[in-house]
Length: 208
Image 1 (cartoon, rainbow, N blue to C red):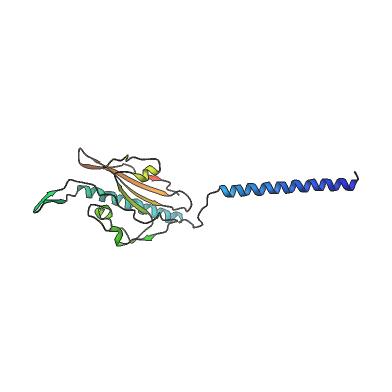
Image 2: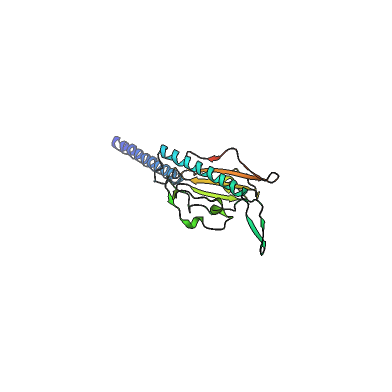
């Protein structure tokens, strides 16, 4: 083999190796991109703004919890037959529809309508006599007889107990991450006819 031919062979081998390495690198990059979950490009709120939103949600949950307890303590009159009424036993408000069609993202707020607070006197937001600001930045839920939001985060404390209620606020403060969830639960103690509220607010992914 001549010297020129040897040089050509070496250059050819180096060129092939370079192309193979480049192709493998491109494949790894493509695989990495495919494996990464899509994230929203919408920015989240600033740290001070996030703190304000969280405090507002905690205060709203505390207010709703007091409302649930007050609703249980109220006595309502029911008509047993024409002209006769009987004091109904204490009872918790029935479940409400979620306040907000979706979980807000990135600190956004949505307006509330009067229709969302309509319904029977013993049900949902009307029973709780809840009248928040015109717009909110968390989706609020009130559930009687189970704790679905707790359960979704691996802490199902309700277990179908008809005497337990759950009040939650949920928002996706950091778009693309886990949602921030704050919940308060309470249980009616049948022997004493009193509502016992959980000592600690359940918080999941507060920084998300």
